[in-house]
Image 1 (cartoon, rainbow, N blue to C red):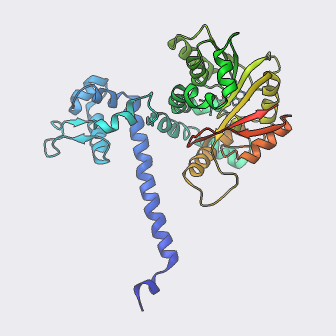
Image 2 (cartoon, helix red, strand yellow; image 1 turned 180 degrees about the vertical axis):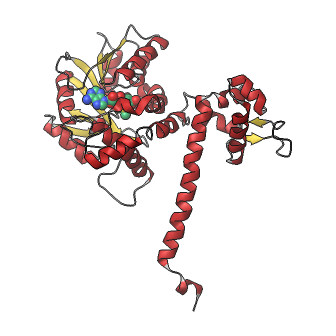
Image 3 (cartoon, rainbow, N blue to C red; image 1 turned 180 degrees about the horizontal axis):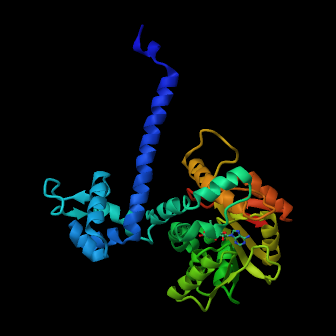
Length: 367
Ligand SMILES: C[S@@+](CC[C@H](N)C(=O)[O-])C[C@H]1O[C@@H](n2cnc3c(N)ncnc32)[C@H](O)[C@@H]1O
């Protein structure tokens, strides 16, 4: 009997899954150990010098040498850092951050920076006991319970896109809007579910006349957004307020109303979209950016589906279910779902804008 005839497909699948999950477990440990280096400033301190020993790095970062030595060995073993001479005594070894890794781990403005995504992956695991309870009993896990790593992780993950692409690729895709944002009288923009405010800041930076009002229901996010506007020197033109998206007290007449990666998190997305429709001026634009998932469920899914389902199971669905009643959307909001929400909110049509992006799809909702 040939070897292939003896192969048991169940055994092959078992072995493949063992291999895959073993790699995934190591990857998970990589993510958490990178988080340690990010939060303690270890990568930055390494980048500030050509190389360092464990005691030099500990002294530079105010950390304990024994822990730092273990972290350095782990980082070198897993291929993130380099060691100059592995044969030396452990305390004499010098470690360095390879030039090609610097951008990925430290350059916050770069589209290749993954610090935000990794911080979010750690944050999404914070309220696991509450998540298990929600699975058993229903209800959800309120957004603030996910803590600062999630809030900051989301903000930092999206920030490079907002600052690099808003005025160069995204809003220019609607030429009339692009022109209006540069014209007088100054255009007014409402940014719904603005989180830590980088989308609002990105719009104001790209269009030096525009007045931007960011709204979010999360107080910690709005505090951070206000601080970010101060740092960006944009407080004259960018303001933030704690508001639910469906809050009826918001005044209208906006030339642009945006919602970046937030509709799928809302317990009541139809009410939010209805309010966005009220907020937009005649001739204005309502733009929603949300996950670039497929039109329909397929399994196995591609990396975008896996990423978004992962965040949905751990975070977004539970956040959306924390309020009642809830549409229970989850991260994987497919185009037909958004079209249904938009129709229920009174929009006449939904167009997909010709904007290339691996992660998000951009919709224009026509009032
Ligand atoms: C995934 S975060 C995106 C934040 C920001 N737009 C960005 O892209 O960085 C989703 C945001 O939606 C906000 N949010 C959820 N439900 C909301 C509601 N009903 N009204 C206003 N904001 C809401 C959350 O507080 C959170 O800041």
